[in-house]
Image (cartoon, rainbow, N blue to C red):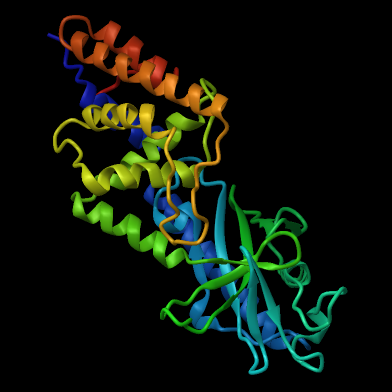
Length: 334
């Protein structure tokens, strides 16, 4: 009798092709911490470099939330600056303006060219680019990429996206936020603490099973078999599902199939931003939704077929799983 079991084969595949290995995670965190130390050291030696709010430097993104699949290609980091007493923010819709007096000596060189009472997020990103350029051990020259200053370490395969930010005082509802560049010269609200807290809470409520399932579905999403959705949207869809459902405690393929069945219908529904900032995260067009729904339905059926042939015809089961996960899936069980 064959020793092939779908559950074991998927776990072996995930370990070898989807999950980041511990050494990579440790090196990623270490390289990020080293870069922050270099930036802090450089800032202290640079004239006109604004004061930092070092206690509010914050990791964000999928690497920070442990939902990053292979390969580790980018690490996101918020680099927080300290506001002066005359500074405050105002809002127009989702756009945030950081305002200051025109004689603010600390930030006046970073004012918008259109209004010297507003801090330019583009100038703040360019400040980070210039600062990073003074640090060695990198493959490329740092450059501005939208809301971040981006560079790549020479010893590793990943980029760093360093995002300047400010941390707000609590508003009337007692909430505080990070203000980050919006890519257009102004600012927008975010709160990576909320995302991290939610993913950790849902994961812990199901004995640590959920983050791996997020990574598996992200891997499936990136295969060139359908339209794809944004990683953050997909992650929140998976978390939404497990807010009210439990994964299989014994068979990972059952949990994956449950998610496929959920996506078939849920891809057409609104997906609320858990931070309460962005509103509906699901801005996919109808063609993309149809493509994703159809693929999820097809791959759910393939998993069902694989289950049916698991014992009597393992080769057929493996063929179905290859159609879902790609040719890298070999059916190895150890």
